Length: 268
Image (cartoon, rainbow, N blue to C red):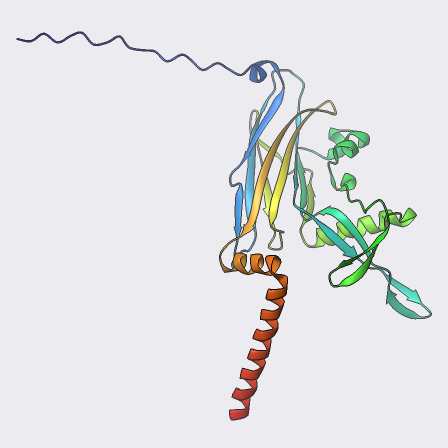
C-alpha cells in the first residue's frame, strides 16, 4: 500500500493594505456608468449616472459639486439693431472657447457651498463659466463669411455673454441643478448627466469637487466620449477630411436628383 505525502500547508493571502488617504485624508472618488456614448441616426439623447463615495474621517460635513464640460466650439452671435427705422444685424461677434455642453449638479446651491471668489477661481457654475473672446480683434473667415472677432466689448460684454448662456440653456446644452447630487447612503452619492439630442460629439471632462467649509479639499477627474457611429460617422469624417470632394459630390448628387425628378414628372 502506497503512502501519500501530506498536503502542503495552506497559504494565507496577505490582507490588502488600506490606502493611507482613505484613512487619514478627506477625499472623493467617482466613476461613470458609461464612459462612451455612441450617436447614430436614432440617437434621442442619453442619461448617464455619475456615482461615487466620500471618504471623510472628520466630523466636518462635506458638499459634492459635479461639473461636466463638453468640447469647446466657436459661438457666432449677431444682435438686431435699428438704423434709420430699419432693423439690421449688427457686426457678428465670435466667441472662441465656449463649451458646447456645460452642467453643474450639487448637494445644495453653489452660493451656500463656497464664496463667489472661490467659485470664480475654479470656474464652477454658469455665473462663473469662462467664455472668452480672443485678446486681439481680428478678421477671420468662418461659416463662409468674414466675421469680426471682438475682444474688447466694454460694458456690452456681459450682455453678449448672457446671450451665449441663454441660447445654450434653451437648447438644453447648459444646465445647473442645485439639488442634482443625491446621497443614497452614508458617503455614497449619485448624479445624472443628461445629454440632449443636439449634444456635440467629442471628449467631455467631468470634475467632482469636494468642499468643506467653503474650501475645495479634493477633486476627481473623469472623461466621457461622445462619438458618431455607423454611416453617420463615415459621412462626418469624409466631410471634414475632404471638404472639397464632399462639396463636389453633394452638387453632383443634387444635380442628378433634380434631373431624375424632371424626367419622372415629364413622363407623367
